[in-house]
Structure formats: structure tokens, C-alpha cells
Length: 318
Image (cartoon, rainbow, N blue to C red; front, side, top):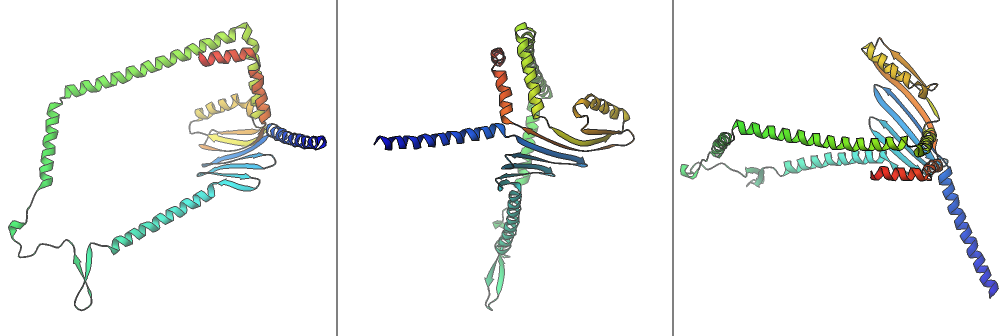
């Protein structure tokens, strides 16, 4: 009896270990296997672009593209789970059905027209109108003529004249001015209130940064932000940009901005300015990867600092 119980406990322990190992393996795969992305875009009179996101040897593959309209496709283990193509075909079928329904309604309207067919003595069909004209022997007194549109228009014009007489130009002008003044004053109050909040938060952040005890936390925060940006930003980039404007001064200003950003794209993107023509075209391709475990570790390093938690709590409730 004891041997059977030990055997059952052994089997249960093995199953629990297998389950725990499976959960741990799935967790490690999610945290350590990176999500790879690749994007490519170009602009030649019209913008075009595609972006691919893959995870775990293309087990999950998401594609998003734009060319005159946005299209997407999601594949899991090679099977299509979402695709914009079938929706477009379904919409086309729906429009075709709508057009077909419209022609059917028109046919029904033609079939059930305002005239009814009546058989004659020879077996033919005679069309008789529903709204027949009055007979010739009808008395003139039987026909009543009422000029409703003219009476309605006269009463309407009279009402307008009365309203215009009641509402003078001075009262109308005073009402408009009061509305404008109230709106302007409310807008100024809202701007002043928001500016006070922003100024209060700015002073608090400046006091926190200037404090000696918080400088270590600020350095930690800047270091972790730099690591996070270096991890998320593309690893490889390649492309070119050509631009030119009618005014050469505008081209020179844009070139100054590009020169300021040169440390970020040097060796990857070539910039060509044109001072003698108006043009804008370019192409860019970037590849990179994002590991969920690394992102969580960077965020956790910041939240492990006690001073940072206090600072963040005060900033949220300030």
C-alpha cells in the first residue's frame, strides 16, 4: 500500500515538474526571444511603405503596408488569421449586391407603375391611369381651387417682418458682443489655469533635479533612458533623401536642420539638396529588434530605486 502511494506521489511530482518546466520555458522564450522588425518606405510623388514584425522564427508574422490605402496581414504558424484582402473582396461583393438590389428595385418600380392594365373585350390589355382626369360633364362647382403655397409664403414673410421689427439691430449686436466677450474670458481663464499647472510642475521638477540627493537618481534615469533608446532604435538603416525648394533660402534652412541631425544618421542615409529645382523624394529601410526581457529589466532598474519611486509618486499627485 505504501509503495502504491509513493508511486502515485512520484508521478504527481513528475507531472508538476514537467508543468513547471513548460511554464518556465514559455516565460523565458517570451522574455528572451526578440521581436524583430523591418520597415521600408519611399516617397516618389506618392508615399508607400511596408513594415514586418516577426517573432520566434516567423511563428507570428504581422505585415502592415500602405499604398493608396492601409493593408495588413497576420499569420500564426503559417496560417492566416487576419487579412485585409478578404474584407476588400467582401466589400466589393456587398457593393455589387447593392447595385443589383438597386436594379431590382428599379425593375419593381417599372413593374408596379402608376398605370394599371385592364383586359378588354378582345383579350388585350388596356392601361388605365389611377389618377384619372375629371369627366367632361363634371360641374365647375365640384372643383375647388385652394392657393395654399401663396398663403403660406405670405404668412411666412409677415412672420419674418414681425420678428425683424421685434429684434432690433442694437440688441442683436449687444448679444453677439456679450457672447464673444464671455468666450474670450473663458478661454483666457483656461489658458491661465493650465499655465499655472505647468509652471508649478516645472518648478517642482527643477527643485527635485537641483537637490543633491536626487542627482544620483537623475543620472540613473538618464542612463536607463539611453539604454532603452539604444535597444529599441534600429540596428541597421539605409536610404537616401533628395529635396529642393523654389526658394534656395528654404533649402539652406532645411539643410541646416539635417546637419544638426547628422550624428544620428551618418553612414546610413545620404542627403542630397538641390538649389535649382523643386523636388522631394527618398527611400529608407530600417531593421532592428526589441527584447521584452531587456525592456522590463531597464524599467525594473528604475523602479528599484527608492528615491525614484518617491519622486514619481510626488510628481503624479502634485
